[in-house]
Each structure stands twice: as C-alpha cells, then as structure tokens.
Length: 93
Image (tube, rainbow, N blue to C red):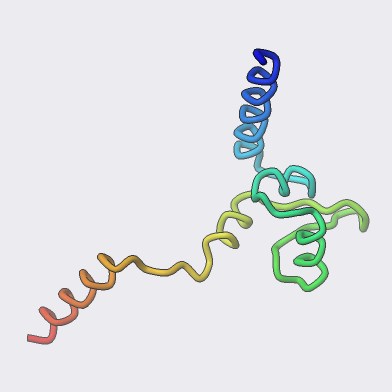
C-alpha cells in the first residue's frame, strides 16, 4: 500500500516537472495536457496545434505556445460579462 502511494506521488512530481520544461515531446505533451498521443498526432496532422519538427522525424512542442493553444476560445464567466455590461452602460452615459 505504501509503495503505491510513493509511486503515485512520484508520478505527480514528474508531471509537475514537465510543466517546467520549455520544450516537450509527444509523450510529455500527452502527460501535460491529458490528451491521448493519437489525438496529438491528429492535431499535428491537421495543423491545429503548434509544433516543430526540426529533423523531419521527431515532434517538439513549445510549452508556452501549447498553453496559448489550450486557452484559446475561452468563455467569459457570468460575473465578467455582467461587469463588462455595467462598464459599457456607464461609458454610454
């Protein structure tokens, strides 16, 4: 039981280390995003995700660009929308 807990904690630490790396490979990206590797390859094939392929074989991903990709098409919260509506209405007066 204790060894399982240790392994679980080590896996969590490893995932946090990936978050600190500036460049990720496919396996690391899968761990970082929770996407399956097959889905990552599909995104690459359709040029929907930013990637680099410097030697023509191995895929690399810039973590900062991946973060931007993951956060695109964000939806505003109800509070943000209400705040913007109030600000807009105050500017109109």
